[in-house]
Length: 405
Image (tube, rainbow, N blue to C red; front, side, top):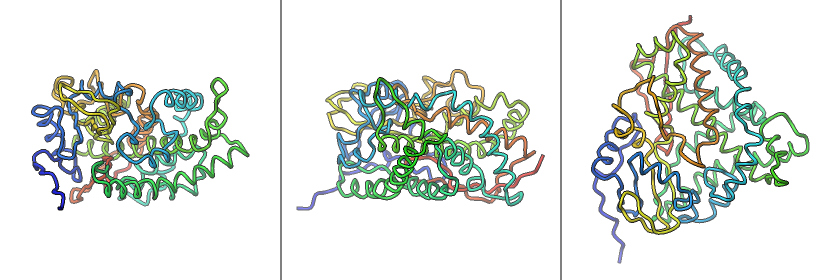
C-alpha cells in the first residue's frame, strides 16, 4: 500500500523570499500571533517568538547543533571542527583554540586593508553601469577573507563557484530519506567536499611553510597543550569563509537596495559616517542573511507549552524573532538609530557567529568607500531583483548606475 503524503495547509507554508522578504515577514507575523510554536505535517517544529528563540539558542544541551540526532552521521563527520554544528565540550575546546588565532584585534587590524581592497575594486569597475553584486558586494568579502586566511588570489574564482552552488541548497525534510540524501550530496559531496579538499591541501602546505594568515596561525594555536588537527582547521576556515563572505555579501546587497528605497536615509549616512554601524545592525535585523536556523532535540522537552519529543528538528525563525513587537517597537519600520537593537541574526549564546565582527566591519567599510567614491548609486528602475531560494537570503544581481563624486 502506497504511503500517503501528509496534508499540508497552504497558509502554514512559508512563502518564497525569491523577490524579497515582505511576504515572509507578514507570514511570520501571523504565525507569531496564532501559532508561536508550530508542528508541521513532517514533524518539524517551528519557533517564532523572540523569547522562545533565545531559549532554544541558549540551551545547547537540550537543543543540539549536531544534525546526526535526526540525519545520517556522514554529514556530521564531514563537518568536524565547524563550530556552528558542534556541542560542548568539543565546541568549548575548539573555540578556545580558535580564539587564540582569530581575535578582535586581528579584525581591527584589517580595517585599513579592507578599505584598500574596496578602493581597488572601485578602481577596477568597468564604467558607471555595473552589477553591484558581481562587481563589489561579492568581491569585497571574498578578497578580504582570502587575505585573512592566506588563500592565493588566483584561487578566488573557485570559492565564488562553490559559494554559488551552496547558496542554491535548501534544508531537507528529515523525514524524507531521499531528500536528505540528495541534499547531502548537493551540499557536501559537491561544493563542500571540494572546498574541504582544497583547505586540507592548503593546511598541509602551511604546516610545512607557515605564512601570515589565519590558517597558519590556527595550525600553530595551542591551549593547554592541545592543538587542532588539519581537518578541524580546514572546517573552521570554511566556516569563516561562509560567515565573512556570504554574510557580508548579503548585507551589502541588502544595504544598496535599502538606500535606493530611502533617499533620506542615504543622505543622513553620507553626511555622517558614524551612523553607518547602527544602520548595518538594522539591516541585519530586518534582512537577516539566514532567516532561520535549525537545532535538534536531545531529549523530550517543550517550548512555549508545546511538547517536543527527542530527535526532532526545531527551526528557529530569526527573522520572526527580529520582528517581534514585544521586543522591537514598530518592528517593520527601518530605524537606522534603533537602540537597543538586540537582534538574533548572529545567534545567541555559545554559538554566536564566529565571524560576526568581520562581516559587520566589511559592510561598514564597504559602505564608507562607496559614499566617498560616488555621489549617487541608483538601482536600475526596470531591473527585476531576485534572491537565492536556498537557506540564505542573498540577492543574486543588482544592476546600478553611479554618479561619481
